[in-house]
Structure formats: C-alpha cells, structure tokens
Length: 341
Image (cartoon, rainbow, N blue to C red):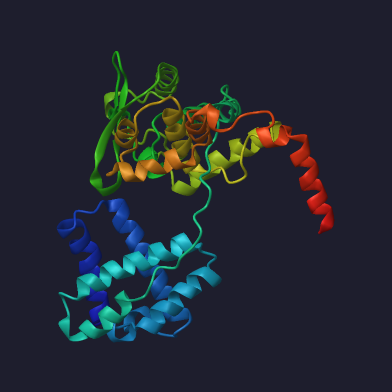
C-alpha cells in the first residue's frame, strides 16, 4: 500500500526532526505522538477519513479547531491539555513550512489558531504536617507498602517530576557523606540533588530487601511494577491518590482533594522557600531553566506574604482612637449631620 504524504511527514517529524534536529527527549516525543494518535482517531470517527487515506490536504484550520473542541467535549480534556495538543500541532506545522512550501498559506492559517485562555488553578501543595501524615499510611510490613513509602518519600525529598521518578534506576544513587540522586529532566537536562538522611536510610532498607544494589540490577527501574518494568504515570498517581485518600480520612482539613504527584514537588519547593533558601538554589533543585518559573512559589506562599506585611512600618496603622474621634463636639456634630440625611 502506498503511503500518504501525511504519514511520511509525521514519521519524519517524530522520528528524525524532534529527536535529532531539536534534541527533544524520548518522553517529549511520546507526548507529541499521542497528539497525532488522537488526531487520527478524530479524523476517522468524526470526519470519516481512514488513517491510511489521510493526506496533508485533509488537515485544515477549521478541522484543527474542531479537533481541539472534540478533545475537550468528548474526551474530557482540560484546557491545559487542549493547549498542549495545540502546541504539538503548532510545532508540526512550523516544521512543514520548510518541508512543503506549497501549502505555506494553509500552515500559517493553522499556526494562527490561538491558545485558549483559562484561569490558572490554585497551586496544590501540602504542609509539612500533611506530608508526614501521608507518609504514615503505607504498611511497612508488606513489600508493596515499603515500596510505596520509599516512592512517596523520594517524590517529596527529590522534588522529582513523576516521569523523572519513573526513569530512576539504582545506578542514579550516589551514597556518601551527602547522598545524591541524578535526575534526568525535561529537554534531556540532568541535575543532581541531595537527599535527607532519613530518606537515605529508607532507601537503603528498600534497596537491600529487593537486592537492587546487585551489579546486574543497577540499571533496572528503581520502582518496578509487578512485571519488573517501569511503572506508568497513572500507576504512580494511583499510589499518591490511595495514600492521600487514607490520610484525608484521618484529617479531612489537612489533605486537599486535588492532591497529586506534582503536589509533592510543589510542597518541597514551598518548604524550601519558607526555610529562607534562595530562589536561585530552589531553581537549580527543581531543574527550572529560569528563576522566573520558580518565582511562582514566592507568589503563592501565604507565609512569605505575611512576613512581608510584618516588615512594614508598624506605625502606619495604630490602635486606639485618632484625635478627631476624641473630640466630643466634633463627634456630636457628625452624628447630627448624618441624622439630617
């Protein structure tokens, strides 16, 4: 069967352009590929065009807009996810501008599709008491319970993104006076972060019980699924939701209902900020490319806002009555004036 131009361009875009020319990571390419999987599904289900017949000419601005609406209405995607799908498509049609100039007008029409505005959600993070309560939930006498306990602890202590945690292997750990873990983040960026003494002790127990320090197992997943493979993001999210739910039953006001994997990363950053660690160091710890991204924690911290207000001159607002309030004749005059109206 003869391949279509759409199939050829998508294959080159995902297989060569993104990883080789742009240097994007395998995880990023997977995310982009999901957008095209959904686009093919939409074109077949809604537009009645089979994947093997789909051509570049079938992709128009109106169909892209309707595809994005479909992801929201029928797949239940939030606006953030919808915009991420559009971002992947924008990248593809920017790439096409240099591969197929005949369709330049159509590509630029599609590139004119706007990202949808939405209200940014309130940052979900946990207090130190809440993190402690969640970590008290796993059953440490069971193998799965110990794994989940160490997983949750490392998710917080390293402030790793969920995919970064999934990709960790025992070889990424460096034990010493200061134990560190090497994290491979977005854009193939690598950072090394220190771990707390308590987390190191828990890790050693977990590694010893599962024989993960054996030379033959150093490159295996640090937290494998029952089949010995890497866990999925959904599997890690289910673990977080499970123990957050258990902790919420114990203290409903302490654990937010929207607690997820990223909540542990947010929590670590907030706790570092409230411990007066400079934003530059927090930026490097989190693997942000710019401190501007890290400043979101400073804007979200209620404690820091209160501290800033406390530094204002206390004489600006004073207790007690002002001089005019003490003037009985003036007060009487004002009362009488109000009665007239």
